[in-house]
Image (cartoon, rainbow, N blue to C red; front, side, top):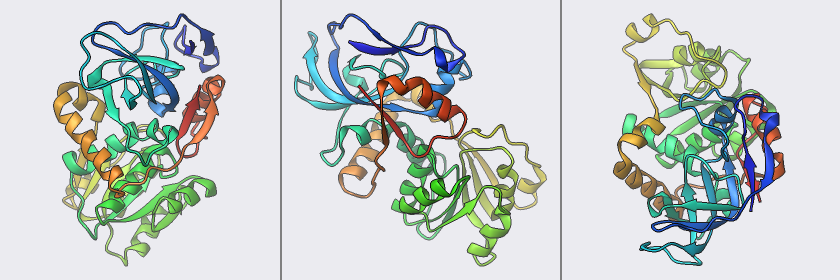
Length: 322
């Protein structure tokens, strides 16, 4: 089998594609012939040694893969050779073969090709968790999404639109803003613009109901100031750096700060998370959600992809193809 291997945390240039023995599934597990693997900002942070849950080299990165089961270990029920599945694992997905357990598997909706199936779970899981478990959005709400041209932001646009919200995207480049508009955003604001002023103009002075902040950094305070009285600010991540915001802006306008750490919640609530992902998959199967097609790259591009993600040059989602 071919797999990307990280032998040392730090420089992503050290990633290599290696030939390893093809594993056989042990009792209670299955083997998947991988057709596509998702590449995320979290994967890149892990390789760089900057993630809050450190990885132990040597290991194969990647937490999402889509493919077909080609071998089944003893005692496995509910899955068989030939089943088309999505595997959600912490590691191991950047390979042409993956061992997984049944509780890590989900059946792929017929409407999804392997590349989209391998790249939706983390970003849609985060958005669905944020908008249905940590806060709620209502039809007619206006949601401001920062980092809107990346995978996390694009998923948030799609999920917010599925609940009847209006979406204003904030993104750094024309290419990213165009992608956000194609995904369903109603308007797009450049990161270097006066985000508060533009958001107020686009809401006839009323302000934003919910901020979905993927990036943090300098745009965080402007996004917070764009909120209406009693609005909600949802903290997703810090790709542009940890935000520094004056908390008087929260107190004086009765605003709510909401932290979203889906990964930590998953570890504590595995059964509840499976129900959450089933909701997402049902919405995709019913046509209420439409994950965008990712950019497909060969497995050998893993190091370059990590660099693009860490440097915020990546646009949309990326699938590594074995």
